[in-house]
Length: 298
Length: 188
Image (cartoon, rainbow over all chains, first blue to last red; front, side):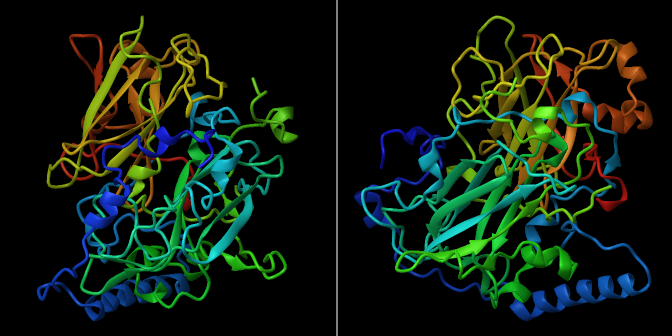
């Protein structure tokens, strides 16, 4: 791991798992007993289908498309007590909300965009390059802004002590990356394709392989955290988190595209994924319009 | 109106803890430095239980009401006020920031701190505001607060602690449910 990368970033949280050799040996190696009382995938799938069918019917009856996930989406059981029951209150953004925190190369080292070089050896798994652009709702590049990602390793295990999945940790993979977008809004991460990941929402619940993305725009109203998926995943119809976006066209927006032209021979598969933030509510300065934000911006 | 369809959000999930926190993430300035205050609170679910896996971000003007444009939130130099902070809650659902009282960004405006809330089980981030409790006149004139009934309005106004700090809780659901904001109009 290059010394320039701030290791403290990775160790800032007390929940961070110790990935020393000792800790690796202490990792759980047994399977948890299956919970006979847990709900089945069939039950969950029926619930999701009913919600999806009702939405499709509403669309046919002229209802507007729902672009964002439903906050109230009972098939994701943890959402039941964690969604507001009152409608979001419409507000016109005020001054502070019309600007975004500024990040730059002071905040993020260029090497943080390569998740495969953070340790002494090569991580196990399928090496991939994920790249794309961050755009605002008007199609303008979001330049000089922070992109953060985190993910499971190739075996589907997160470096987190609450992750009890008995899959191996990889001493050469942490699964955290950051970068600052270029003048054209571009970002690129080199990483390992994450594995599917089991969770306890219901019996035999598996998350499709995904990478968490955290994004800032030029206005705080554009702040978003989301997940990128891989094309053709057979777990899509079974996953309540992906299905919480009831509109097929909208949830398709979370799926990356495989790009063979950018795939590097003998090295890495390439995926492309563009992220569109909500529309701008402020008139941009000339510098922003030119994509000149970053360290020198005042 | 947007020309492109925005990418949908997704839950932050349970495993942000090794990724999103960073050194001094919740210290917009050093604790104990002149003018610094503690901003603290608890995140609750619809059963009134603290949520142990939520993470909050704040974004605010400085004491003069100026919007910061400085980089350096992730690697703080100890002197530059960047206006941005991030605090994961602990096991008891409590978050803490060290910051300053924001000034009004316009003459007579009610000062507030902008907030984004993320949690496992929360499908998409939620926006809200923390208004300072002083200056009744400005609060009464605030376009957002004056559009809310008194019970709901209270959820966006912090309490001033004896030590000069602010206490403000997040209730995702149920009695005293925090007012969360939609800046987009009908498209969520």
